[in-house]
Amino acid sequence: MNALPLLLALTILPFGASAAESYSPHIDQSYPSDVYWGDTHVHTALSGDAFGTGTRLMPDDAYRFAKGEKILATGGGEVRLHRSLDFLMVSDHAENLGVLSHLVADDGSVPINEVSQRWAQFLAEVIPLSEVLNMESFEAFSKGSDSLAYGKGAWQADYGVDKRFQYMVWEEVIASAERHNDPGTFTAFIGYEWSARAPSANIHRNVLFEGGADETRQVIPISRFDSSDPEDLWAYLQDYKDQTGGKVLAIPHNGNLSAGQMFKLSTYQDQPFTKAYARTRSYWEPIVEVTQIKGDGETHPVVSPNDEFADYETFRWLIAQGQPAPDFKNPVDLAAQSYARPALKLGLDQEAALGVKPFKFGMIGSTDSHTALATADQDNFWGKFSNNEPSRYRVTAGWTFSAGGYAAVWAQENTREALFAAMRRKEVYASTGPRMTVRFFGGWGYAAADAALSDLARVGYAKGVPMGGDLTAAPEGKAPSFLIRAVKDPYGANLDRVQVIKGWRDESGELHERIHNVALSDGLTENGQGKVEPIGSTVDVKDASYINSIGDVALTVVWTDPDFDREELAFYYVRVLEIPTPRWTAYDAKFYGLKDLPEQVPMITQERAYTSPIWYTP
Image (tube, rainbow, N blue to C red; front, side):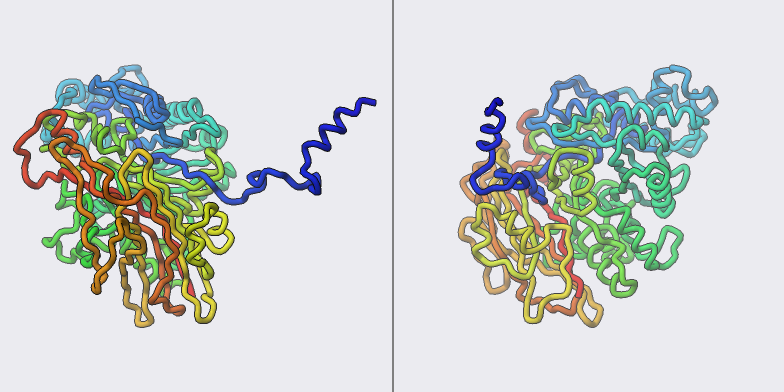
């Protein structure tokens, strides 16, 4: 008898361990130990507005770029990410998906009619790729014009395409994602953007499928040509789930330009909310995009007047179509229904009335890039559209654009299934670009010493819930405590501070918010009014540089709410601020030798991250 197998069996089990136990503590670890970075909002030439403004890169190019490959941008420049992403969803507009690229390709797939012939000529002659955006041509292209006699823009026109064409293009989208999906290494989600409209506003959602080709090819995208009512979108998602057994969710677009429509307190049909509506909405839309190229959507100064950091990347383009400003009749209500923080407060109010929060969402960032390039770094910003790629002109023409944002997801592995599950449970956070690591737990028994533990996450999950979770039934005499750790982007700036944003509804029905500075760098402290002296700045604008001689590498704390009332609905989320750094406009100015720029062009930014909330319900 060969004794070697028996000897091996004896040597691989620790003394005293049973066969059911493992020496490796990670075998049965039930919580995520890794954060994955990605973008769920990137457009390619399959989107009509991207194609019409010059983009010729396709989904394969977008995935290659996200994976860290060097590619050629539409304008011909070489471009690459400093660090690859972990996941990406190409979210091309469902409306006329792929029509313009096939129309210009003249492959016979788009029916020949008056509309298609006229727009083909327009695309060929009126919108050549150039460094400077021709706004007159863009307006005609996007909205239509009298001279075109159709009254609709190129991506809204009726080209007479049939289901066969829609299935053909959708199969292209699916095939591209399948080619690039590499479980454990890189996740390519299948999805698209439902670009619905309310009066004078956008109420877009990105539809993200968990599954692969077998499930997703059984349907075709729903578009606003089918309906602009979110309830019809949710019905479509339910039908998909029932028909295929697959999983899917919708991610509302940054609401800052929604003209108060994204979080308005009535349905699309102007009916009051019901419990069923609130439950359906919160189920299908567990996370919301709160920061991207078209500005930041966390909050606005008119609804957060006591928040010194509220006026961050406030988008000012097309202000009359949706940006809260004093000239609106009800700027506070408008902003409250357009931005994430006040919407979370409105969710508490609705819960008091209905028993369910319609606005109970986690928070992510993404780019909304229409160049196929998921760039969110200030020193590597390639614009919103391809005619906004780096040039000596774009600072003055497009300075209001932000450098974008990314989604951070705490998951057990880099797969569609694990990332989707994390999004569903809201264990996600938003970044304006930097890849800082943020942990946030809430419970009833964290101790100050827990913040110093090397295995902070183990204690965090053991004693409470992570970001996106719920606390209920406060023990008598107990206030919630929060375990927080933030670590700088290893290639980025030091941290300035960690703040807990609390929103609550008092017993009289009033809604409130308060900013708590819970961890400050460089030994800074609050004064008697709760204010902190600015950390200062090391930015050299002319050189587009900064020094990490201020701020901290990491900030860790256990904080207990000093004003907790166990009878009041509340939420808490974390905002982490970096020290000031150069904005993309400063990098452009240095590279192109630009001088005497308009005073309103910001050259310094203070980037940040927002976690998903933790909610308290009595």
